[in-house]
Image 1: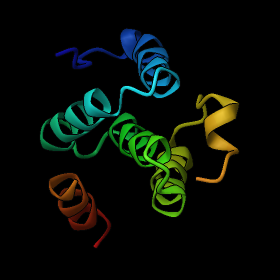
Image 2 (image 1 turned 90 degrees about the horizontal axis):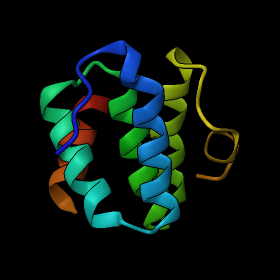
Image 3 (image 1 turned 90 degrees about the vertical axis):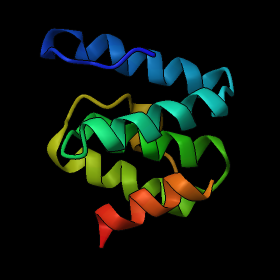
Image 4 (image 1 turned 180 degrees about the vertical axis):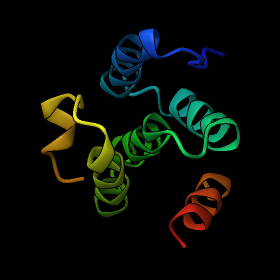
Length: 99
């Protein structure tokens, strides 16, 4: 699994995440989001990934919440995701972060 460790790869990683959304690869988004929540809970890319997962699964309200959280500290989000309406373990980890 691809996990970012250096800032220079961050933009490529965002493209990777956007491709997963466009290709409807929700299982891969879920696995990636889950790994990022465990490994990099303070990263804006983590919460962008979680938001993208919820967006891709049609859970727009929850997705919008996490996309907004990631966007507040990260200004390079693709416009089609940052401006759009936006499995239990991921939900649990995400709610722990939000609470």
